[in-house]
Image (spheres, helix red, strand yellow):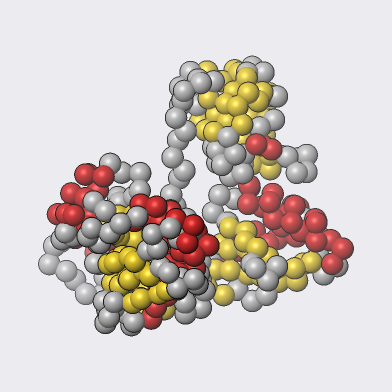
Length: 364
């Protein structure tokens, strides 16, 4: 989404993959909020900082669309075909790990700040704008320079109000170093249901494969199980009984069912998954996201009456047993580290490797 000279409006900037896009077409917008039947007001050609209205644009070209910005949050797919499938959201090689808390100097300007944060999130696909439970507004970016530019745009353009900013801090992740030293038990508030669970760390490289999309919930079950079995030596039966990834259904943590012959298990699956998503988003150490942890459900004891094993009983129970499993598996905090790649000629290296090629790639 590219900001326009008209404050608060955006061009939907993208590529035409098939067919021809024209002004006044009735289109389907597939994104976070799917809205069929909206019209494009104008089609424009974008050349640097200049824009030129144009009637239609054929396949393969880059185009800007006017009139669809209020229906898109960050990215989306626009099509005239009724049964078209939306394109997958882009994954970036860097993560928004540097965070700053912002607040308006004048409390009366709070609505302007909220609206400005929404515009900032639209204009930059990398930035994240979060509202904490305490009401604090957090802006997260890829680095201090990225954050500085985002906050300058927020203060001078998107919100247009003076802001108070905290010092930048990095986001941590919670993980474990060993397998849980015991099977953890948690009872539901009514004492009629019990969950048994253990935690274990991922094998090296699995969290990165999940981040890259090599392993995901969208994959076909047998294909994913074969990949985990061959590369990471998982048991086939366990690899086929992955319940979910977390947080947000795509994160680098896995909930696995390793139970045998448990009654009513499918009835509480959604509640256990909800508790897992909650716990993996706010870990037990410092309420940061978890990373690289596999949680195994070993056994379940449930009340025979369905009314006594509802979501209100199972979700907090699942969260508690996940926290207990993490604490019994030598929990650790992970700090983000920048990976820098430098290309240099071999004459610039202080230590000469054996292979004499003109260019080397050095990772720091």
